[in-house]
Length: 356
Ligand SMILES: NC(=O)c1ccc[n+]([C@@H]2O[C@H](COP(=O)([O-])OP(=O)(O)OC[C@H]3O[C@@H](n4cnc5c(N)ncnc54)[C@H](O)[C@@H]3O)[C@@H](O)[C@H]2O)c1
Image (cartoon, rainbow, N blue to C red; front, side, top):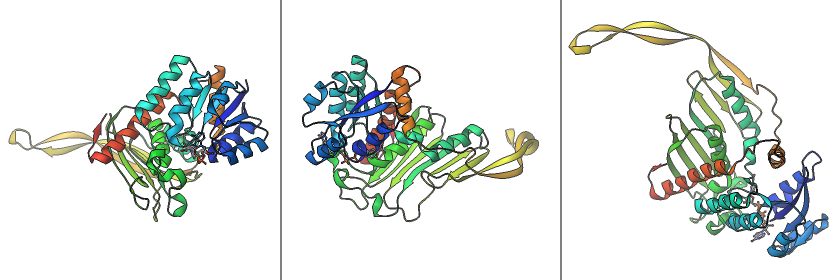
């Protein structure tokens, strides 16, 4: 079934990516109406044939549409998501979804109470580099994963914060802008419970109000660790992904990259070896199983061609609304990610590890 879309906030994302995606023939969504506080933006929307509103109550009362995309600066997300849900619409909100965990809990409670879909535009779960990484892990070639690095290293002024992202009361800063994507991918990949979070989230070239560098170390229940990093000033960009398993490792250099390399033990066996040990102050021998690597191998990526299309997120939401598929970006997965996001902020502020 085709959904009619009303946009709250029609700037770079709302009037750009979200609008354009919903104009595609293969996407079961159609742009219909816009509420934005900026008259210039409303003029642009009108020139595209959309209904425009300068008042949120009239927009929500119009019933011209059935699906709302919230793409304003971050401090308005909670207010608009809850208002749209209460008015009877299904809602997708941009990231970072909220300013704090209680706001997100309020959005989830509202969606459950009114029985409407609520999801978040975590489009980077569909990034090519991430899909390639999953292909490698699923192949089993690098064995059981124990350490992951996932980062965005930007090296020039194009990565710096700008506009409302420069201000804390708008939810600005690199951690909320890029870091949340990297964190969401990492937590989508590793589904086991998070036990502790240690972070440093600091300003490099921005004013002290916001960060433009974030490094987070997450320890999961099994002992697996993930390092998540987002930097606006990295003259030696490190790989987007490095994942180590007990049989090999994978490295994917850049975001959106369609190349990478996997090194793994192609042939190995175990041999029983006897070694000297000292129980009860006596010299004796004890056997152990020693791993012998007979052959290392290297594969170039990708294993299978990867067509990156963020609109797959829209298709998934359409399927979930039609009851023909499971929602990928569930409110529960967003809450799990946001709790780690908030724990990282506390860790950085209080200079301590936070246990979850
Ligand atoms: N998922 C992604 O890849 C991605 C990329 C960029 C931005 N974003 C997110 O999208 C959201 C919007 O970012 P953007 O880059 O489009 O910002 P933007 O500044 O380009 O657009 C924001 C729009 O919201 C309007 N607006 C501001 N306050 C409003 C209010 N109170 N009520 C109604 N409209 C209001 C502005 O007039 C503007 O048109 C943010 O949450 C941002 O983090 C996500």
